[in-house]
Length: 390
Image (cartoon, rainbow, N blue to C red; front, side, top):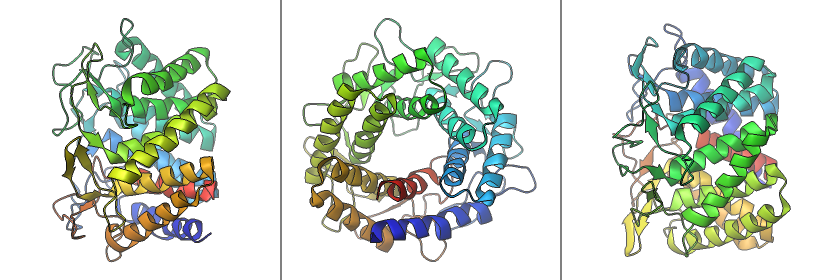
């Protein structure tokens, strides 16, 4: 199948080599923290836990797929740096940010970052059977459950200081609402716990993963099969924004979690939800050029830009909907998104994907090519998923 062949080739020939050739920091260790939108390396930029956990996940997953020793070498490098510099040896958990020499600059414990640490470490354990990685992932799981899980009203709180006291400013980024519970953090805890459960069939983990799926179906998914994004601690919705990328990403991640648990009734339910969510995005989220727009409200499109990661997630979500239904409209649409991605999102000159393009398809050069949020995980994972699924 053309989509599989092209995405496989793109991963092996373009995405992974870019990160292997352009981001390795041979002076300070690990990986550079930033390449800007003009493709200039910023060797003294801070290094983010999200970026580094995602590099760890990507190269571990690539090794698990292809068994290429070069990928394992990069995964080992990512693991060694992550354990040495991002893990808080005194209080446990993962720092948000370190400087270019590896010293903590932001020591807060954002639960989103803890989840990505589990995700990367679990995938690395799959690749290497390195017990240190599994123990580190288990320790972070216990910390999340001990500190962040809301025993009274369910769900997870967002952010803590270095000593695990709940912060007043809980935001993941400046554009987020400062609310106690968010869909985004819960989605990535779900994804992390799904991967951890594949290597560690722990009873408490199983219970909490099952609970997360139920939370999504009961609280996060609205009557139109889109996600509510922000809540207070009592589960009162605090926004009406629609994030098309998260909706289509969540559609397949929810189903994957149910499948990993091998829970037949949850699998049936999440399959139904997955296709309903994809249908909603197909009706409301795609522009006539085949790209997935960024954000809307019930009144209409709020941000028509095409960010890199929603295109990647759309391809996977659409293929998953096709696998569930065998309705070819999903497969046709996934090919359309891939054609848009090839023509507008992939930077054929300098490598990797542009962060985002405007309605006319022009890239925003003020957005990073490599940074805390710009990583090889969404696009790398999409390629790996298509290889496995088609």
